Amino acid sequence: MDNVPQDAIIGIDVSRDWLDIHSLPDNQRLQLPNTDGGHERLSEMALSQSALVCFEATGGQEWRLWSALDAAGIVTRQLPPAQIKAFAASRGTRAKTDRIDAELIARFMAFRPDAGRTLPHEKIRRLRALTSKRGQLVETRKRLLAQIKAHVKLGSAEMFAEMDEDLKAVLGDQIARLEAQIEQIIAADETLMETSEILRSVPGIGPVASTMLIAEMPELGHISGEQAAALTGLAPIAHDSVSLRGKRAIGGGRRLLRHVLFQVALVASHHNSVLKHFADRLRAAGKPHKVVITAVARKLVTIVNALCKSRQIWAHQSV
Image (cartoon, rainbow, N blue to C red):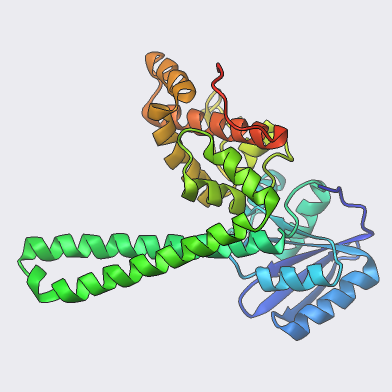
């Protein structure tokens, strides 16, 4: 990832309807509509200043803007909200509402020029959209199955049996169609296919987890193990307060990715001989279950990052 050589930095607080803008070093403030016209005006402003444009990850509201800026040839960064809030707290400027404003985003970028990530390749964006939709449908199916169990307990299962079976079939078909599209995208790209094979070679990582890793962490193989752990929020964070000094916690990073790694770690801690041995040592040392799984997940992400970097499949090794 390149550092920030730009003459100016433009921080943006992105909402559904508006773009609140703060530029450095001139401290100009501006509000533009979050529309194609607003994106065009912002692009002209950024190009005229040779500026880098940065914004926090908002769960998707920034993606149209991000794509438009990237298409205009503007250097952009998506920043993790947790890191910006920590920066605000360190400066004593955190707002009562905890709102991350445009000026704070710009000043964080100036302070941490290596932070954030650039726009992923279009194929990765498509994979991310497909895996996200698949996840939503899987959750919907889980809720449906829970409702079916509730109908059985209430003695009303027969009333809804036909409807529930139809819904299960529809959801199953839609999930299968999404999985087929995901597999097609990966199979059509030699690099993605090789990465998928590397990830799936690790005992505990299946098709769904490997796709999530590819879609949510395209940096795999291009960063250090420490950076990989930090991106997933699995790097231990030291506390400096008197009450918490000496303790470590995890946090920040990409929450969805961390959730997937926890699920994989649960499986790997029992069925991956190397990681099982590692987990057993921690259990024997009296470590709590959550600490064990977190440590396994952290080791797992550093291992797969190293494998992707060397372009080698999993081989039994000691830890």
